[in-house]
Image (cartoon, rainbow, N blue to C red; front, side):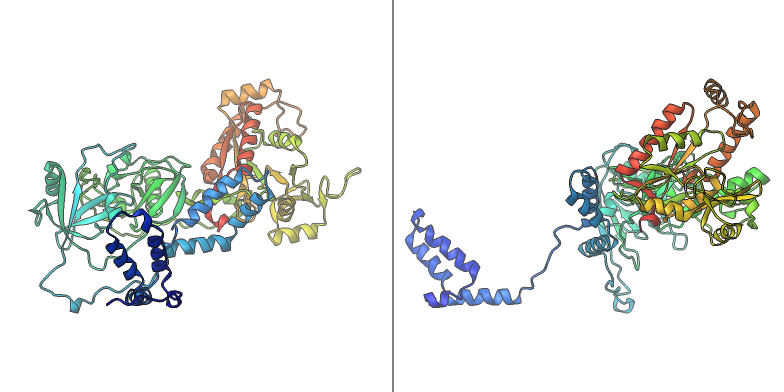
Length: 602
């Protein structure tokens, strides 16, 4: 018989059961059912036996904490975007904006997300081989739904993203690649190296990828795969690397890509989210902000560099010195052919590819400061890892105007400083020449001795320097840093070679390339403005045609060598329009997050 608890004992009654009992007693008048059942239920809830069972249950059940969310870092970035427009309205917003950008807090949020997503080590080891039954193999059955939608941009039915090939050693059909963001990736059921045994009950042993392709094309509705899991497969997570592309890429014109339909086309300057770098030659990526979750294939940094070297070798010597490409068939890098992709239940399949790992022949160059342009030509810009830099209210980024002499940089600089002299300012240069009457120290120049100047140059304290009429002139890096710390915008128009020093995490400059228009437009606009040639010692004559041609030639060379360091290109055809574009670029930097080299943020 159930023993009912007294009022004193009820004080130790479990709170959840006690609450349930009180609710029952308060609601008895509303029930029109059997009073005997209500009495039994009330007696049960007050029994010592039930209370004891509840206590035992609470004691042996382990309470587990579950994360409220697993993307705290992403939410913090979204909060920064919201706060950015309110910095001038509220001091609390300004304080929170600065707080959320502190490295220790961002590190904490990243660690939180890693734990919430269970992205941590160590992992349990694989079952030892000697404990497995050698006569039996683990088999998994995967069902996918075939889609007849064409594969391409704007397609809402996302491909599963898996390619197949023939294993060169065993001759078996295996999964060659799993595309991030596709259904196969999200389900976690298909992995690289899985052996395909059957498709819709048809044994594929001894068949080629082309034979399997025909089976898939003739199938309708749900397709069933029988797979043998790959040995030693490890879990992986999506990379968070963002890169800026420094070249145009069109997969349809790439003779080396394993499967053209899986390629991701992009333009120079676009930001790409690289989700996987597991393959040495082909990365998986999607465009930043693209709602299409499926990743596409792009050439890796190493492969693109080799392709450019290969193309240069062909252009200069008429033949290729890289076996990686000389052995390539027409259908793909190192492979004899590439079977077109078929979209199966959002899955793409392709033929195998073979990738030889031959060493690249590199050109050895002795670095000579006088031949710095030739040295820079050997740099092969492909991708640059980037991250978002959020503007800080009290720290201003320097504005660096790069371009050929005579293109109009000095006038743009003059107009920008004249617009707001309290905000924009030029950097006072150093010189070893004597002070002229009426000149003030620190206003026109910092006047120093020859020994002091050479000491600054030797210590690497000068962004640029040169000699004119026997006197040294130069711009000090410390002068730029002082302006940054004071909250003012330093405006510079240095020689383009100084970008090697200026474009760094120390200065975080906004680099704008001032480019000339076509020859006819350049000549017409300068003649209409009665522009004086800076190449004339007395600045008393107009430009010559040869000088216009030189401006265009030097601009092309600068762009060829340093285009990957430019934040924006401004074509100075009309000075007023060019100045307005300059102002908009500066305002965006001050009010919006911008993509900069990742090292500047880290």
